[in-house]
Image (cartoon, rainbow over all chains, first blue to last red):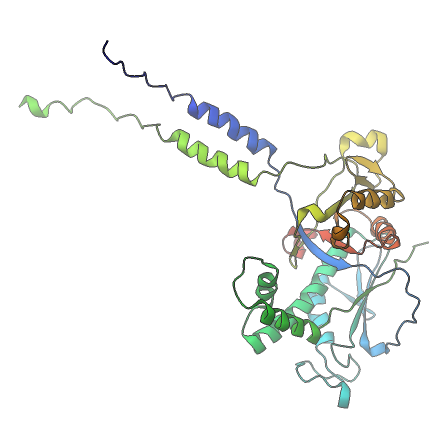
Length: 203
Length: 159
């Protein structure tokens, strides 16, 4: 008996099968968003007295029910908020022990002493829309990040966000301890002090 | 000169489709890899607001999702148009949040509980009142780590 070659399998329909699967996965794919603004809520059982904060060290941001922004008793547009917050945080108006050596602000004695003391107070109405709230949060976080970034560039010649990303990245090869130290130092220079009051009820 | 006549009258040759399956397979593998099967069927509108100061959520299994927003059109007849909370495939009340968090904690190993994060996936049009209520409930049971899930984008896109 002569050897018979096995007949070739017709692969013409392979493309069809692959298409079928492809379309299935195309339809079921939902690219889930898994990033956002992280916050830590204040614990509820605070029995200690609130620390005394001088008026000039508080930066008050109010959002009313019509999504209007009142910053330090002045009406403001959301796009100006970041700059205003940065000016406040970076003011460095303190003298003597409270002086801020790295601030580049205008040293206005009527504004914050140093970033350590500066507190941003955010208050919103119950009828404020969530997107406005997130926008304001985003701008305030951006103000902190920009200042930290400026110091990161000055001290280490690196991008702050990149440093944070590397710190969180388990596969990053480099001196993690040193990086953590640097990031912590930057965080210490501009600590995120964002206080949120419970929203006011309208009527 | 018959040698040279052969080519005449051939027309354009057909394009070989032999590599088509390869291309399709490539796409297929891409989508197979990026596909995440949805855990919850959303019954609410969920257009997340945009922000650009984002932190990525690590460890997806340690995240609890709370959805909120207006019910989708097909549920509006039943549940109205007022923003609602959704927990695990069904509408819930503010007071159900505590039970939800407890049941989530129950399903995790004890040493992982402090790392649990609550992700708030809230529609941009929702009123802050509802979110404050949620936050208040979370504070009551000491679930303090939260994350406002947002899309990547400039803030100006929100308005």
